[in-house]
Image (tube, rainbow, N blue to C red):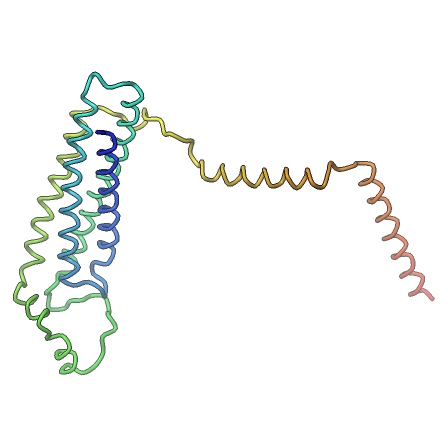
Length: 235
């Protein structure tokens, strides 16, 4: 039951981390807005909550001395996957901090990336002054506060990774995968070889004497054609 719970938590963490990664890629672009920054904040906080819960489950399981060898190997694989997921989350949080600092929401010259909005100043201002835009302008310090909070959260994730390495010693290079590297490619190649064998079985084995005779016949035929062409030119 504990293993299934860890797998479910890790799966949810992977999805949250992947979602956060895609959101970070849009910071500073034409789709950037306060709505995006708020969604980034919610997603990374959700990812951190899942990370804390996953770490607690895996730590308790791996520190259990009565754990069987097979179960321990499975939990170690989950631990390595969890560590990699945390590394990606920390890297994306640092990227979000750098992009958020470079592209502040309410800077006078923002956005630095062209958005394609064109028209007179009055028309653009009229389109921009919606109820949501006014609310966002009233909350002009949101991105500043969020970046400060993001700095603190990056430190927390870094401390979590360090604490994990201190409490549970699972070197990544000692964990064996369930399948060999490139198993998908090998399975595809295996399917191709099976198809080739089935074709060979249908067509039968190759007769070397027949192949040699066909080659000699082709050479003689080509020589005859070349000779006929030369005679025609000379005549």
